[in-house]
Image 1 (cartoon, rainbow, N blue to C red):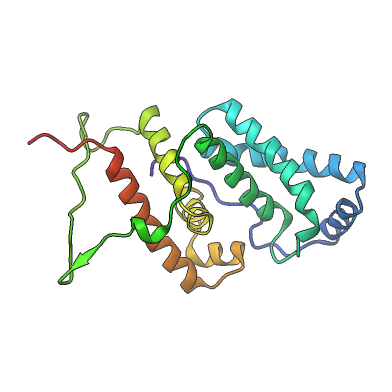
Image 2: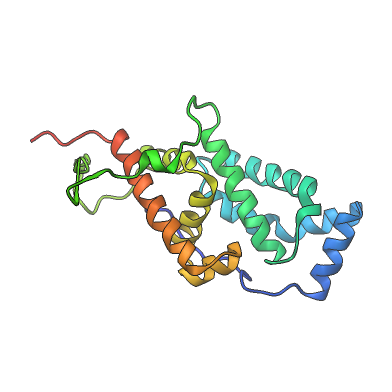
Length: 210
C-alpha cells in the first residue's frame, strides 16, 4: 500500500508527570487543559490524518472529530499507552470513518473475507489486477481512494493493526505495545487483515484481459 509512512512519536513512552496532570485536568473538565491538549497534538494528528484521508478537508475534519470523541471518552483513558498514541488511534478511525461516509456498505465480518481452501489449495486464485502503466507506476488518486475505501470496511481491530504496521511502518512489537495486546495477536490480526483487504481489493479491480 503506497501511502507515505511515518512512525508514531512516543508510542512507547510512559506517561510523564505533565501528561498525568493534563489527563487529570481533562477528566475534571478543565477548559484550559482542553486548549493545551488541542494545541499540543493538532499538528501531529493532522499529519496522521492526511495519510489516511481523501483530501485536506477530510483530514482536518477527522482531527476535529477525534478531539470531540476524545473529550467524550477521556474518562476511559487508563494510561496503558501515551496520550498521543491513544489519540493516534482515534484520529485514524475518524479519518477512515469519513472515508466510508456516504457509502452504503458497512464494516463486514472478517471471516467472510478470508480465502477459502479446498484440499489444502485456494478454491479461487486472486484475480490479476489492471496495471496499464507497468509494475512501477505510482498509486494514483483513484487507487488511493480504493485502498482507503477497502481499509475502512475492515473491522476496527484488524484495521488499526494494518494502519500501524503497514502505513505507519511500526514493527509488530511496537504495534503490540501501542495497542496493549500480545505480539502473537498482532501477527494474527495482521495476517488475517491483509488477506481480507486483498479480497476486498480483488472485488474492485478489473481483471486483466488476456
